[in-house]
Length: 110
Image 1 (tube, one colour):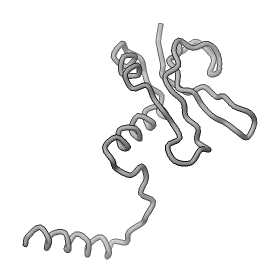
Image 2 (cartoon, rainbow, N blue to C red; image 1 turned 90 degrees about the vertical axis):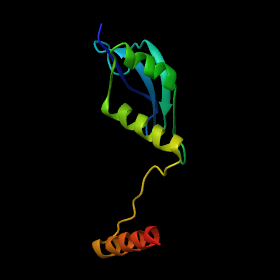
Image 3 (cartoon, rainbow, N blue to C red; image 1 turned 135 degrees about the horizontal axis):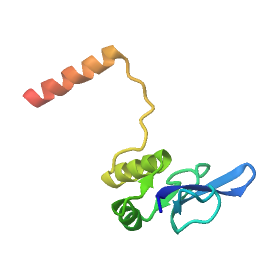
């Protein structure tokens, strides 16, 4: 039995939310699953997902394969636990990057 950790779609039309589940690869996307491992609500502001990390690590240890979206959720969870911001959408020009690097080098030097 090949197990995948993937999303199933829940919610109404235009109000989509997802569950993170461990499911056999032969089951349909919104069909039967083995275990519920969390949720994701992309329309919600702030922290819009929750994962059961202990159970996910158990399934990954038994050979389950995480889908690309679940991998990105795990990465976001890791970043938020480290205290880093989730996204940095600010674009910085090359000139400003050089100035910031020069200032950081000067601060480190003395």
